[in-house]
Image (cartoon, rainbow over all chains, first blue to last red; front, top):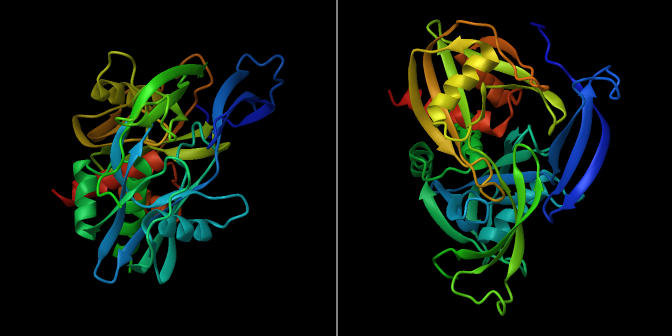
Length: 190
Length: 190
């Protein structure tokens, strides 16, 4: 067994379908240094090009965490998640996080700390999700949803209750679980 | 603001593209109880139908965690992850986790404990990822990769080193971060 993982080169990239929040592409790939015409490993891999994501662990001065409930068309259920969304073109992750928190919940926060960044799905997606801890959160406005179907319901839960909901599976979106992991590591390290 | 999140009904489901490890579908949806012909919110949403995933926090009796390094075509880099993969049709999550651990790393384990299940991406995917803690792991064989391009390099790292790699971002696949979160919660609760 080699002691280094094989690297690959993309030789062709075909857009198959634009899907509003992501593009589906087929990549024709061969192991690095191999001729794609003759390599027996040359293959097509399907990937999603997607904008980056952000999410926010927003805590009030009373230690309550801001959560959103919304319908998810992938899992076909109402989920409990942290506020978050897509980073717009030209926008920084922190600006996007502040915007999403305000739009989805009407909350702002005083102190913003980047606590982690993950790959939502390194196997099939090219983007990252950056998590912020937002301290001193308070409600300053009503939520502002875009003209489409977006619709969230905001709630506040104690932080230990949020961690317990991850443990029990009531909160189960992987990117929210990852964000809770980053927040626990950050808060434990203080 | 309503105090309940809006629910939706799928009125049509169109397969757009089969992509080997997932199918891309377009769902035509309207809010629950609304006529899709007349609702102004009737929209198409793109989702991936995917088999379920599993991953494994496999610890040796010496407290070392089994990791795999592999090329990821989504992020176009070599990642460090936990062993895992797709659940085959008709297979239980635990059987799939045992199979993936053995195939990817040549390790078996004595005690298998389900410690969490998450939605890899509730917004666009319909599947779940189940995480197992596998105790008493030891190497019993050489890895067995399928005929295609799969290729992993196994390494062992202390558990605190794995947690530190999540904190630093060196380990950043969201499903691995989620699995580490479940393992920390389980191990803290013992």
